[in-house]
Amino acid sequence: MDSRRSTLSLLLLYTCATLVVVSNGELQRFMEPAKSDGSVSFIVIGDWGRRGSFNQSIVAYQMGRIGEKIDLDFVVSTGDNFYDNGLFSEHDPNFEQSFSNIYTAPSLQKQWYSVLGNHDYRGDSEAQLSSVLRGIDSRWICLRSFVVDAELVEMFFVDTTPFVKEYYTEADGHTYDWRAVPSRNSYVKALLRDLEVSLKSSKARWKIVVGHHAMRSIGHHGDTKELNEELLPILKENGVDLYMNGHDHCLQHISDEDSPIQFLTSGAGSKAWRGDIDPITNNPKSLKFYYDGQGFMSARFTHSDAEIVFYDVFGEVLHKWVTSKQLLHSSV
Image (cartoon, rainbow, N blue to C red; front, top):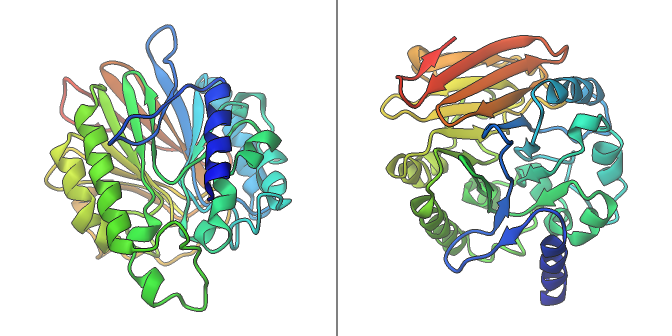
């Protein structure tokens, strides 16, 4: 992104309803005020943008229904926003065909906070960050890494694709847009430094990290070695409660074995039903839930409690997990 485009993007973000605060040494920050009762509710969806096909439109309809039920504050996208190869430019009609024209329910007309996935990097990754898209649909906010401050909840969005070494060495015929990542090691080091600064300064009751790739998964892609080695220790050291991701086209909940962190996958926004569960990848005791089909996840937080709910393509509840800061983590 050249300096003129970057400046224009920042100016637009400052003038819209969402307040942006930029601090040296920390990630860019967006403010989302909590409701009058202090609660925060949002939906998490990943791996979705297929022009409505593979049940994307049906999932979107159910998201709108549940969004109204939970009094939705905003939507989180865990990446792979546009298939098969991201957007080819900021004027790609796929943006409206897969986003604006699909998520039309009144309850979904809130801010969408999105990270990039590996498929997004296969196109023009800068396009999804462009202010031009915000001009087309003001809901859209996508940066490489940033923070959403919802008062009692802080969400730290992390650009995980550059962590994965095989994308540089074993691209499998794909071309990745590495213009913003001239050096993998330097980029990851700087990102981890900025994330750690932001986490340490957080006073939020609940801390959530969002990335595209899974740390723990029994799905097709499985664990991401680089994230477990480089990112997970920072999460553990800084009291992170939840890690939310996509990448595997499924819904799942895995508990960490030696910390309170819960790993939540919501990557079932369209194409799913891969049918290749690997039950020996993780300790069965740590696996709380797995569903190899389309759906999404909702989250609701109060000062004392958190509730995570997974839904299928029909909007039926598949799994619910409730925890309290005063109690040990428990499953329902």
